[in-house]
Amino acid sequence: MNFKNTFVIAEIGSNHNNNLNMAKKMIIAAKKCGADAVKFQLFKSEKLYLQKDPRQKLLAKFQVDPRWVSILKKFADKKKIIFFASPFDNESVDLLIKNGIKIIKIASPEIRDDLLIEHIAKKRKFIILSTGVSSIKEVIRAKKIINKYHNNLAILQCSSIYPCPPEDLNLLVLKEYKRKFKNTLGFSDHSLSVFPSIVAVSLGARIIEKHFTLNRSLEGPDHLISMEPKEFKQMIQGIRLAEKSIGNLKKKILKKESL
Image (tube, rainbow, N blue to C red):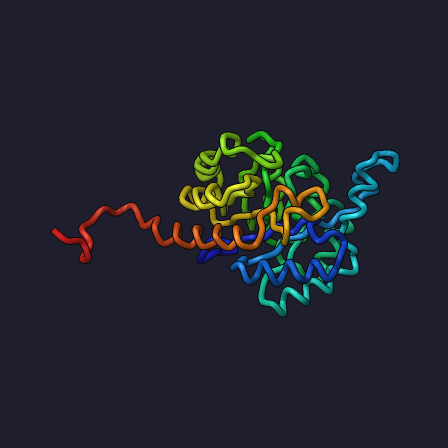
């Protein structure tokens, strides 16, 4: 995929609180903020954790009902915003493909899941690879698996800390990625500020992903580290201003400059 402007993703994730109407409201709110896409997480809690693990019951409360995929895809299409998801198992990947999803996100925890990555790569859809909790060798390994099938891929810098303090964001890794990879680059921002994503754009990020919520005080694991609509809109406005301000490598006297 080629992006004329920075592609901004509102990461709804599990912030829909297992409520279809809330999910729809979030899609509308993200569109009003200026987001280009909304992203959900598609998983089965029983496949991620053992039944005795308390996290299994917790996540079960926030997982997307598979029947929603078709509904939310059509709703997002109607609102003219892209819908996609991070699948955590092969069945979820197949469900997304069945519903005509053109982008698949590989979440940071799955970067070592070679079998899942290969299953996704075989679908030959645009892949967004998030690189939290990984070394450069692991990023290269995941890319090699994808490249067996295609190179329609974006690589996102990410620090899997929730929330992530500024000193741990390591945005200069984007320069290393630019040197090593001939792919679209991006930034999955887990900070609580609007500024890191704006800085990332100035360093070459063409995709920005940020957790999104209607209200931080809502119950759920991710609301507290997510951005509310007013802030999200401000971030996007900053990104658009950064795009206009970057310019090019040529230094010249502008016609508008005065002596």
